[in-house]
Image (tube, rainbow, N blue to C red; front, side):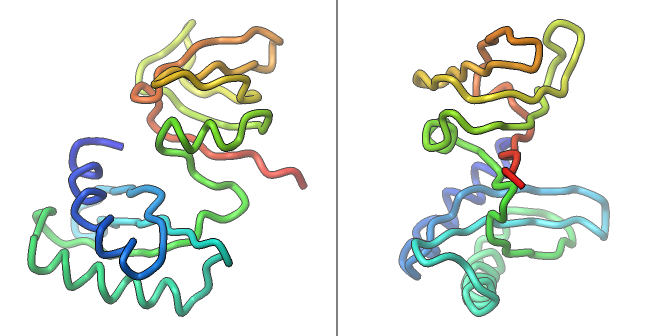
Length: 152
């Protein structure tokens, strides 16, 4: 997440927590008047349409008052789904042993897209066993986007 997403996360987290949900992360897709702000929420019993509507209503009210994003955008509230996005080190730590697909901000060994199994998480570092069998270390903040690979 970039600085703007971090700001929105800090702004909305107390409101969403008060409703009984966890705000997993924020994703902003800047595309002019077609920009989107996506919030990923979760709850112990899972997420349904009514949950998304409730969070959307409350988040919209906060965003209208605080106005952290200039310009037009559509607000989307989503469950994490089977290919759950991972944002923070603790998210990765919860899925040690699982497969993850991710993209780094700057190339590592000439590539930006990786897939592998989460081996270990230390503070801000992730250790991923990639497809070649090699275990590589990545810094969480260097990861642009990461999702679990569902077992289907």
